[in-house]
Image (cartoon, rainbow, N blue to C red; front, side, top):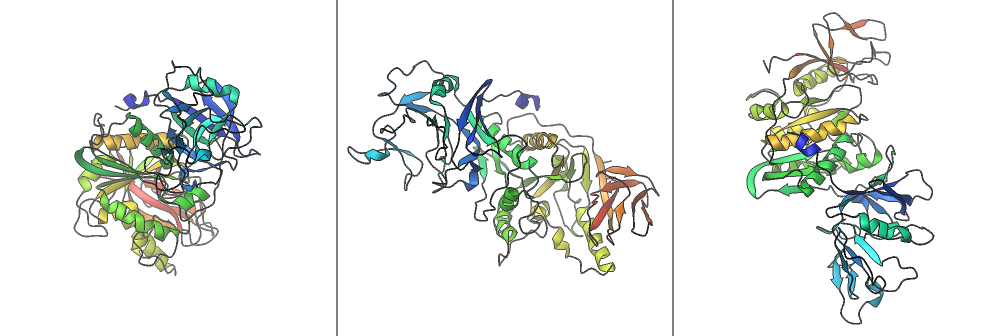
Length: 511
């Protein structure tokens, strides 16, 4: 089923800027094997959500290129046989940078605003040929950035006000290589780890595709933890696939939240002020960044039927799906939708399925109290999927592997496609279920002193035999497996009264 989507190609203009460059506005523009120097905003690149009017920065992201303009006065012989649509710019055109038509093409009356017109005379002919970049234009956000184009660079190759520019001699080479449906992909060069100011007022961006036929409502979230980037990368790819029709949304709707915790994501840290995926609830009094996010996220969760929350983890290990409890009217988490949730979990790709989180965390609380800790309330274990279940829906957590594993993005993307196909949201064959390897979390071992350590570099899902040493206390005492089972969430950096590892056994849930 998925091969159909993998063979789709999209024509892309790729812009890449070295993060360490000085000046910060010089990079390269690539179309296929054609590579030329380019410049971006004089202040460099910025995440699209942080772009502001007049900041001299170019937004990071993938944006459509729909059409172009040329000045017929200065380009009377502009070619008419181009693949990409170009139209002559008239003398009354203005790209509006103020309300009420912010970031729109408007037309001036005779004699008005001569200094704002696209075809006005400039010291250099920078705008003889322009290609608007489809940023902040579908539903324009005031002050979020306007009038971004690809155009000719100044002779001295200084930075732009936010546009992308190539040398004047390369403009026609660019023009002849543009194709209908093309996208521009703007980013730092691969491997750059760039931190940005943590703007706590930046909005949470939602991208929603709503079909004309009724169906389930799926929510896909990434970067609940800011240092887990496979989710945002895979969601960006899925959004593009939906926009160009490679994924055809036909029933219900899917809402993508590429970055839930913007502050943590821009810092490159797990948390902004605290762990958003613990004690998730609406706060009457907002005390921190995560409270503010929770007050927007919780209503969003309640609006949807199904959640796919994408994560990665610090230690090495294979991808797995975290499933909720079986149906029950009692216990830590009463639940009635175990069947559809399990059916979804078995179709996301990974064969390793874990369950038993809340009960295992309850044991962690009891152990902390037994060793003199104040402990947390059980609500501290409530994250996105737990909240979703308490709200009447269902959802799973997808752990795509280690944070920096390049395969994690592919795991996440294929899971998004499979979830949408399984729910009937996209026009695609339903995926077959995997043969699961289930692990039930049944116990936890705490770090009790700074000298406690794991016996070796365990990975989540590693099997252990009865009596096998998993860890050692500072005294040298061995902590052994009470029976055949598995090491789960080993934490070599655990501090006293934090979880050193969880212990799981083979699940009989899928037999």
